[in-house]
Length: 439
Image 1 (spheres, rainbow, N blue to C red):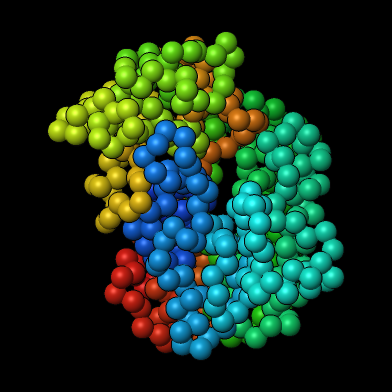
Image 2: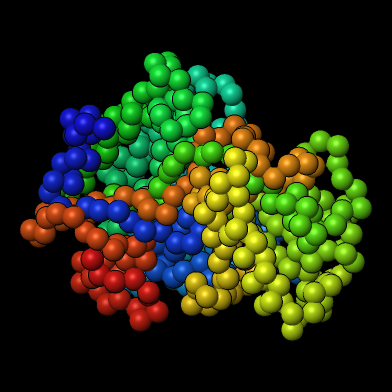
């Protein structure tokens, strides 16, 4: 977009440092924001996606939450020094852990039953009174009702910034952290209309400029918020991942069936979520979870209830799977460029229950369809509802500090660097356990 359409964001960039921000593996909203807030990798946190295995049974998945890890979050570290924070909308930070400040939870809290979505609890009544219509997330964003989606996303963003301005003016704070989910929802819902490389792109479509228009509105609200902040505030603009065109999905469980790793006693007539009771576990060596990337699990004897893979042979089987996944071709017979990661080779630790393989299909231009019954390896739509974009490994970074003169592009920055940079700029020691560096 031309800089004049984003005057406030462009101004921050001109006054500071900027560059690409490399995210974690996988580049998923959760765990990425938690990795940023703790400067720990997903394996150290033991969080590998939105839902994680709670035990070695075949059907127990738990939504990511703060009870799964002990690493201190940035605002909890600041609390130990008597500093105060406002934390608004950070995914994965639920239920709220007590700290010196105020917190409003993200969309991930909406799917968890019971409890409060703010800390302290009394803040909920204040939100209802001061920002009527505040929502944690847009409902049913995987929908063909594009006009309704556009309206709801805009309204959500306006209410979030209304609340942010209210909290910035009425609370004392040393750290103010706001996450807005609107850009993510716009990318998933409207990417095809503005991306010439998308197979469904139509030049001149009425929604061709929807994402650009949204960013112009967002930039205005950023400017409003900056006017409420102190003149000497250090300002960071960061994202947890990037976005790119989604070409389709790999039906990973159908592929595992085709290759002889997964055997079903019942194959549904229409594509359906994989149900454990459909699996012949006595003849199954591997199965997978779908999503923006794939998580492949081995059925290991003595670990899973009806395991078949001898532990001594697990590594050999993983190497075999990795080679065959990376050799996979697309629906045109061309190499996909898949990558399969062994968690213990990419993370410093692998806490809780990690997947046995983390898989990127086609450089994440293809997602993983975990449903079964497609009777093909490749489909050109998302299996859980309309989706135009997948995540990418690099997001954005802008760092503007009115008290310093650094200017220009930063290279090699990662999401693990954000928390150490904030601590250093606040004159506080960086815990030795943090894996990032000071920018």
